[in-house]
Image (tube, rainbow, N blue to C red):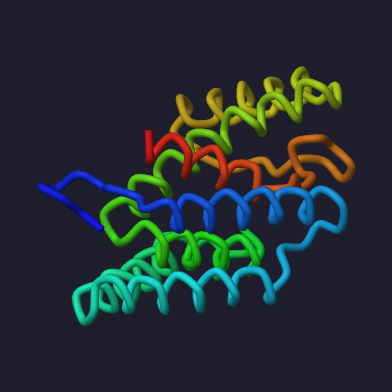
Length: 176
């Protein structure tokens, strides 16, 4: 619940977040999926507990957090930039932390995801190719012919990585 505009997480909320996010990261790394059973369980348990402890206000807190979390990442999924499991995971996080904190978590997730992506690309040896592509796009931009140059097949910058880790990091940053 929010107290004076500041997020206060109960022990049960911290437990749901920790167990849910750690499980999601492990699952995403091992199978490249965030299971529906996990996200739906997080939503159900958080909604019931918020309603139990906060009555109607708690139910509204959980519901608006769910919708806010869903809306933050749904456009990325619709454009093919993110998997549905990642969208549902942020919606589940929103159910636990509420609408204000989940928006901050989404922004922190995007930042964390960028850092993780750079590390991922660098470790896979794809940084030089990515820098060449972006310098070519910059040259086209300065020539007033802006154009996106997609990564070549197999290039590290074009590969997907387990985004549940970014969501976990972004959520932790938002709570801190």
